Length: 353
Image (tube, helix red, strand yellow):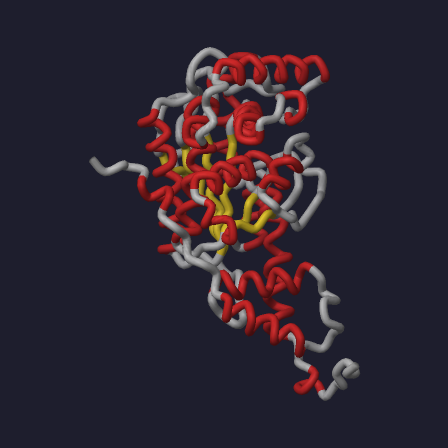
């Protein structure tokens, strides 16, 4: 019998070494000291390899937000009520959220995927309904998802990446919304990294010291319950969320389609960590946008050997940090493509030694 999730381990393409070499050669000819544009040069060369072209471009950006509720919210780990998840879906659809504004500013396509919320979203337009259940189970007492639910969520992410590629995206950004999802992401990170809740737990939506200690205690209790979940998909099933699983599927399938992924903050980085544990070949296709203010994000980035582009103290989620990094990628491509070479400008090159 064929494993319905066999696609998760299909290798991604190897980035084009010839494209990277040609881009490096061009960088050496541009009217600037070698390496003087720092990360912009590295980005241009990396994107040239990923896009297999001498002069990469980031014209069409797809941002897909996956929204879902979490049963662990019943433990009081968030500063906001669970109804906010559905209310924010409506806000995304109406164009009033931070990511809505950023997407418009960038000229990016914004898609919202409702994977299941306790309260009903009122939005009739601009939302894809792919509801799995009203929420995950409370993983302080039981496994968060059933195996069929994990499969459904992973496939929702796969389908989103496929839509992005089919519609000509140059870059895929996945985002998330779900009250209590930092608790889920932290529990996942603890299982994947072998760390304690106290080491990785952050403030999420802005909880107090007392609430933070309670959140640590809840995660610790869940980790004892699910301590045998060391396999990535087992960990995802036991303490993950629908939107986190969708992000895992999206990261993997985007890479399999040679579509670069710009990774957002803590929650998406945890999904990326899980995705690379499941399929290491996708790692070159992940570009990390920023280091957030969440306590565990640096350790997750270190585990991914990732160098984030920005550090702005963000902790909003919604793909907002990734959206803010898009102009850097576009600037890297523009400078690489449009700067004059020494020969074109009639400028003397560096003296040979």
